[in-house]
Image (tube, rainbow, N blue to C red; front, side, top):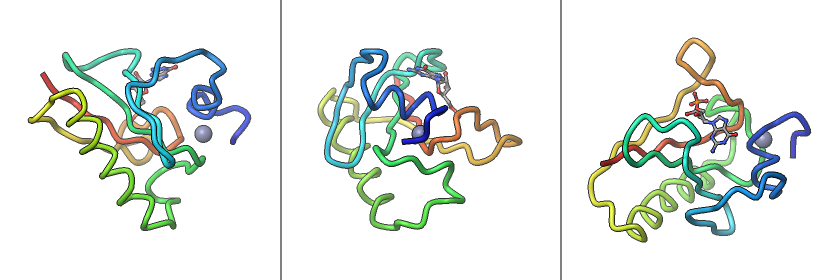
Length: 103
Ligand code: 5GP
Ligand code: ZN
């Protein structure tokens, strides 16, 4: 856990954020400022700043499996996934996450 990381705080339960889905590797919660009717974030439980810092290849497989599992759970068959890496690409929270955007 990184002390000044908002997503680490959410994972630790500091804000009582409702998780749409959770497994051993990740939590999934709704984006606070949704850019689509359905906008969820898949967030690994370990603090990794961005895709550039990710060394654990297996973890990315688990995160993509989490995308499949949570979309199946809520019956969302069609969706986009997005990862912003780096400030210039629009990354605002420096804890790796996958956006899921759907209608
Ligand atoms: P990024 O731009 O880093 O790829 O995406 C960060 C996302 O996290 C943004 O879409 C933003 O709305 C969302 N976000 C930032 N702070 C919070 C928060 O405290 N709670 C939730 N649920 N989402 C957040
Ligand atoms: Zn973090």
